[in-house]
Amino acid sequence: MPGVRDVAPDAFIAAYSSHLKRSGKLDVPVWVDIVKTGAFKEQAPYDPDWFYVRAAAVARHIYLRKHVGIGALAKLHGGRNRRGNRPSHHADASTNIQRKVCQALEKIGVLELAADGGRRITQDGQRDLDRIATAIVEAEREDADEEGDDAVEEEDDE
Image (cartoon, rainbow, N blue to C red; front, side, top):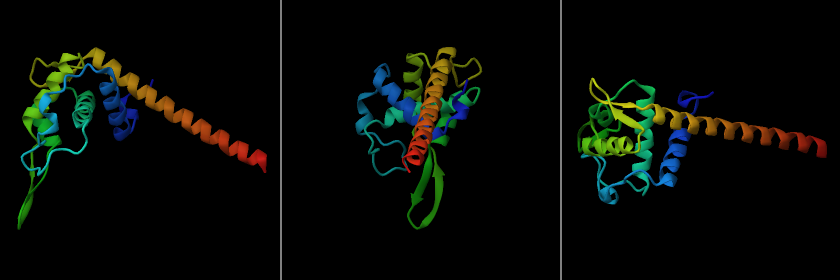
């Protein structure tokens, strides 16, 4: 059975974020449309569904590792702090956003607090993520089969 490691990250995050949005279980804070994702950013995200995308990325990241803390997630989602004519440096993302994403994922049973600090994936969360990854792999296989069938039909037409 294919897992999250077997799927391209961008395809998995897009599929899981759409799953989270369709399910409607994820608690989205009211301030998501006006908040910046880091002090180094100039504007809020353009994508109105950025919270679901961030939740999917956090869930995938924690799935691939044993347990992860809020500071590591902030470092992961950080970026370049442009400091005018001085050299740019890395800046961490907002830890409050990372915390709210983790709390929302805990509420729906995907994550749990680890005994030695940080968050870890639950068995139900692991099962959900594996199910999404399997669906992506099956969809890719169907697309490949359809492309192969189309090529065979074109050869038959000639």
